[in-house]
Image (cartoon, rainbow, N blue to C red):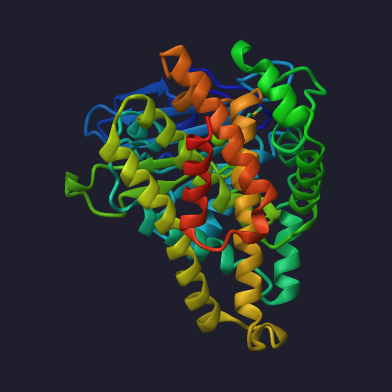
Length: 410
Ligand code: SR1
Ligand code: MG
């Protein structure tokens, strides 16, 4: 049996032995372990291990040296430690909304965690046009609790700086700096994927728009330099599990996972990712003529922003420790800048998923060509509105109005 004292990338056939060696007491006898690789992301390998004798199960997630999306892209396997450690922190602040970590292993770059197989990926539920009534409430609890509690507003400042150090994540941040904040605006690495019918549109509206390029550059440096809170860092609907709320199972209907892009950055990056990915779901529903679903998506986007604001201000008043942050008017000032950053980040995510190398199935599976071409143009126009006018975004309705303006303008 392997000693696991040196890293190797496991295959399905290695995982049962690994679990038996590392967690000898987890599966009760009689044991008949089955293992299946179920990874769906761009980076890692995810194995589901089930004891067929009693149905108990867990997840083994291992970081590979090169990425699944591209063998040429190499990223430090330390991302697995970052993910494991942030999940433990988030469990403290937003318990019940993240998977439990049972154990992590910095040699094999493995995190062993709770199996959430009674949940499914939110993106796929949205692509079936499912309405998720608890989503806005759950995700705003998650965001306010994980983000506000890791800021200088609440944390003792030296303890916060310690976290900044622990979550320096240069290689994963570089992916975001390239894929979100650079390539969509100039295709400098020739990795953009542009639908042929939209090539001229993209040249004019993105590569050729100097005002947009300047604002995108400002947002890039905000992303790199505003160590505001410990972010999830990749909070799209493929990083969220949801469950049919009528299942009667205990626990929240929503679980947020996969925070390997975690680092100290601007809060608006996480919130903006949620809004942009709701808009992708809206595009998919709109192309399929699912009007009730689309209305729910827009109402949810409004609620996400407005509930976030309300919960953030409540949490701020209850938990603020910094003496100067208690100054009258500061909480509102601080929150207003988060909402305008959120608008900017919504725009950046909308654009990068439309023309960058990592696209989203909500858009790429729109089968009717004309509808897909239009959806992409609407994404880009909506994004530009969010980025260029971000200072005037204050409420959830402002985000939805931007989508409606863009949609009406095509
Ligand atoms: C090379 S990784 C591409 C994308 O997948 C991840 O989920 C992040 O969103 C990243 O930008
Ligand atoms: Mg991921």
